[in-house]
Length: 21
Image (cartoon, rainbow, N blue to C red; front, side):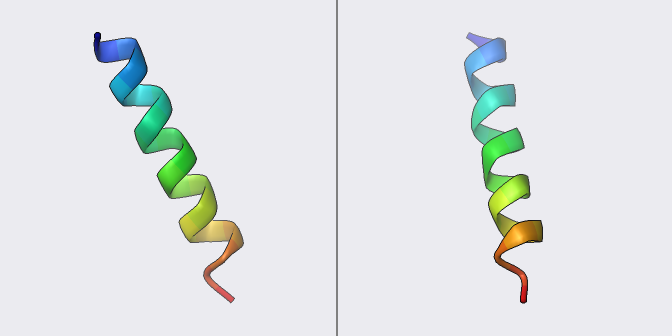
């Protein structure tokens, strides 16, 4: 489902931003 993909991307982006340090 597209919702699942969006959630996966959102989590990946969140980790990228939070763990970007």
